[in-house]
Length: 435
Image 1 (cartoon, rainbow, N blue to C red):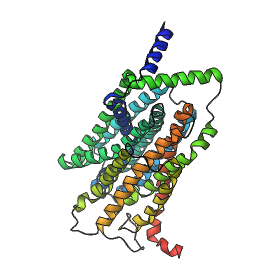
Image 2: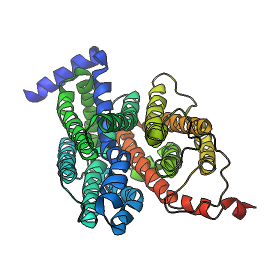
Image 3: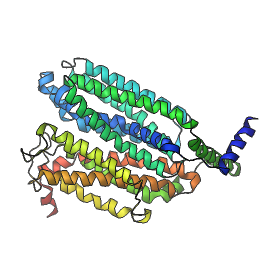
Image 4: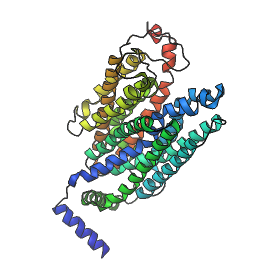
């Protein structure tokens, strides 16, 4: 009887396919997109809390304590992206944590627990044990991103069951995530009575948002539009299993077919993460009379600008999809020009004496570069993520979506590796090496 009822439901839906009323499924997937990058954005945007407060010489009372602050951002990048990278790739070939529901639910719960630990650390006086605070924070980040790797990969696989614009919804959400965290940081910093209180409010907000992701995931199967596409995908998989009962997806074939778009996704994030946040946030204000106050210069001209413009770029793909898949590689590769341009700005890495002359010392030009770099990052990465599942047979779209998510993280990781070379370029004047 249960099988008969399922068959009847499929038959009815095929005759009258449902619509995504009020774009509820789109909004839910966008919420999950915000959740996938929430841990990463929360920690990098809170740079001032960690570096200028918890690990500062004023707070710890020792120079050794501030040494941890010097290497905090680069250490954070590796602690976050190495486990994220490993678990994203593993999740393609092995169902880590069981079925889709278990993977998503367990990942979110682990992330919530990790944020609880972070809030407790913010409440405590860690001035006498900066080393322990640093390593506990890094351990928390590792655990967060192990869970985040599985969660992110699973969400992109889930979105690939639906029309390609729903993969764009996840990418849009990941870009909204950065804007959301930047605004929360500014509000908490402005209205809280102390840095400590601001940090507590800031990290508690992340916990509540992850619980919202938890709730909305269980609401999806109740939506007729989502259930229709899920049933169609199940029917397609049942048909494939009858024809090839023990065959695994041809991973290498899928990878080769999707490779042009996988490269586009990788290279967009490689260039972006080579610049943001490490180089971008270390560009200092050149004009003291600039309209943005110096104390908010990095928060507004770097973090808020990047996240807001990347979100708008991602949102633009809902109306315009240009260039087409065959030609997307050209604007993607041309973005490499941003690497030297940001080094030519007033980039002053911590504890580094700059030798390279500052060729771009106008704050408006720097802000304009940030806007174009950020918008193009959101726009082109969304197109690449949307095109990837379309470049293979429909039955392999989910696997192609998971490959694209893994290449996204690979681009982030290699970009972070390249960032470590940037201080050396300005310390020794890389133009001398080219001449």
